View 1 (cartoon, rainbow, N blue to C red):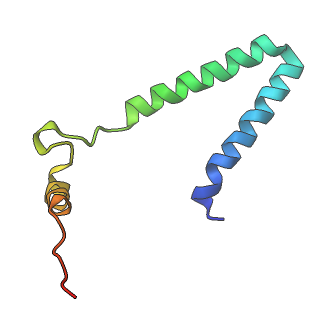
View 2 (view 1 turned 90 degrees about the vertical axis):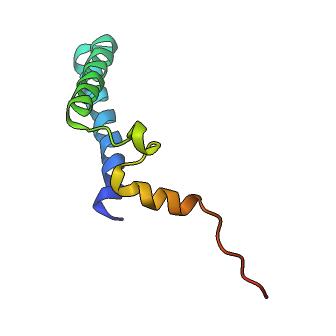
Length: 81
């Protein structure tokens, strides 16, 4: 399994362990708040660091990809047998 394919699985395992350890140490309410806070922080980091790639001028594709998108929208040539 490649590292990029195993990262989401590792995230689920680490999240479950963190939630379980926190719930055992501080109670279920605190565990839920910790997971909610981590999810919120993850969303804020993603919103701050990720850039929008869709452009209304090109019909939703980046300018470099507009030609490729247009080429794929054309019907494929028919092959006679």
